[in-house]
Amino acid sequence: MTYKILLVGTGNLGIRYLQGLLKVNQSLIIHAYDINSIAIKKAKRAIKSLIDIKKKKHKVLFIKKIPNKKIFYEIAIIASTSKKREKVIYNLAKTNEIKYWILEKVLAQNITSLIRIKKTLNSQMAWVNTPHRTMKWFHRIKENSLKKKNICVVKGTNWGLLCNSIHYIDFMSWWTGENIKNISTSKLNKNWFNSKRKGFLESEGEISINYDKGSKLRVLCKRSKKNISNILIKINDWEISLFEGIAIKNNKTVLKGKFELQSKMTKKLVESLIRTGKCELPSLEVSAEIHKFYLEALLLHLNQKSKRVVKTVPIT
Image (tube, rainbow, N blue to C red; front, side, top):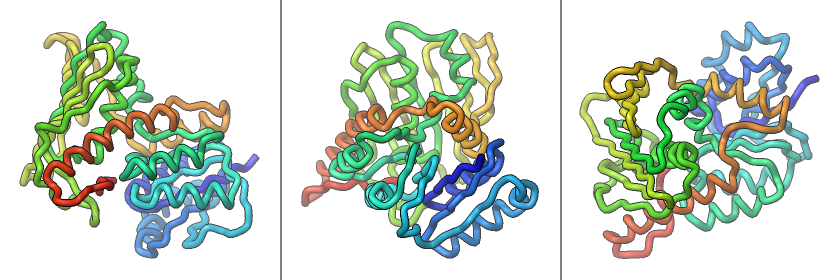
C-alpha cells in the first residue's frame, strides 16, 4: 500500500523531514509544498542521493501551489513559519482530508491564532513536534532520576532561547507529569535582536517556569561571537551534555546516548502513525496549553517596554 504525505515548507527543517520520509519502510507519495523556488531547489539538491536510492519505493512531487481538488493525505506535516501556520492549517483543513497532523513549534505568534488552530483541528488527530520526550536516551535517564520535586537548569550559548525554550518547557512537563503554574521573564533581556531567520527576533537571558507540584525549570542562553551552539542540562542528580551525548550522575555514573536528529525521528514518527495511529509527541491540546502560558509571558515582557499594545510575538 502507498501512503500520501503532505509536507508544507521545504526550508532547512523541511529538508530534514524529507530526508526522514525517504527512509520510511512503507511506500510514500510525498507532496512537498513551498512558494519559494529557491527553497525547493535547495531541497531537491539535498535529497537527490536518497531519491536515487529509494526511487522504486517513494515518489516526491515538489509543488508551489496546493491542489484545489480534495486529496486524502495520511499525514500532513506543517513545517512552515509560525507567522503563517494558522492560515495554512485552516486552508488545508477546509480543502483536503487529512488523517493525522504533525505541527511544528512554535504553534503561533499570538493567542488568537493559537485558539483558531485548536478550533480548526478540534475533532482531528494532531500532535506538536517537541520531541525531547520521545528520545530513548531521556527515558533511560528519567528512570534513574525522578523525584517528588524536580529541578532543571538548561543553559548554553547561541541555541535560540525564544524559539527553542518551548522544547524544554514541554520536556519538563513530560518528565514531572506536572502542569505549568507560571512563567517569569523578569531576567530576560529587554533588547531583542534579529534572529538568523529573517523577519524574526531573539533574545538572551533567563526564562523561569514553576510547575504546579513544586518542580522548577530555568532556561538560560547567552549570545557568543563564536558561532557555536552548546546546551548543558542539569536535572536533579544528572548533568547532560546534549550534543556530546553524555549524561553523568553525581560525577560517577555515565550514561551515553544520542540527541536524535529530525531526519531519524521522522522515520520513527511516520511509521508509528501508519501502523498504530499513535505517537509519543504531545497532543495539540496538551501543547497548546503550554504555548498559551509561554506566549502570554513573552507578550507581558514585550508590553512592559512598548509604547503601544503588542499582540504578537515575532518568533518561530
